Amino acid sequence: MYLIAEGPDGVYLIDQHAAHERVVFEKVRDDLESKVTEVQTLLVPETVALNAAQQELLASQHELVSRVGFQVEPFGDQTYLLRGVPGLADGAPGQALLEVLDSMLEGGGFESWEERAAYSIACHGAIRAGKTLSHEEMTALTRQLEACRQPNTCPHGRPTMVHLSATSLEREFGRR
Image 1 (cartoon, rainbow, N blue to C red):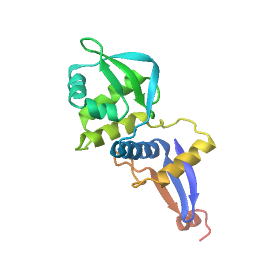
Image 2: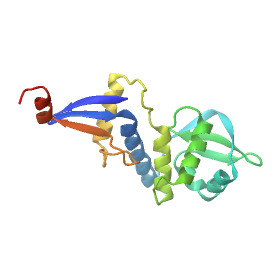
Image 3: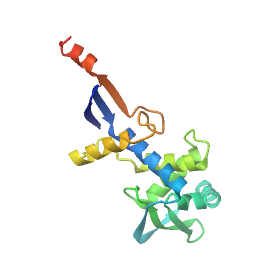
Image 4: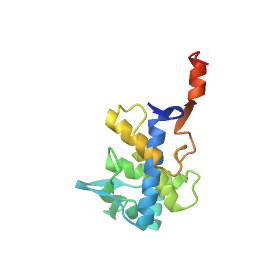
């Protein structure tokens, strides 16, 4: 769940899920601004049933949903065909679409639809707490977090890391 990284002024405990949420959130926002989004085309399109609220959101925000990487088209009364997902999506594509639409409907405290979409993708596309990462993945995540504009919190506002200063560690170990 946590990464431990040493820096010049102490040690950082990093929440891997919160950190990855921040990284994904900023990537999706940047992709929306640059109008370049990575899409993973599904080998076999998946049918997805949407409720009335999800259908209404998709109808009103179809362009945005497409811009974040979901390639969706009508396929019947309440059924839609999912042909592609954001390159960041992991797991069941249809479930990811439903969760992102529901999260966008909830709002998450974001005012613009673009921020709601970025938040939703980040929330559901980030690695899960407890997932075992290789050393290379840990290093990459730490570097990506360092490059973020707001590395200290996830999009929800929770801390991504806790800093233990060198002075406080020295005190804890009786060196001061």
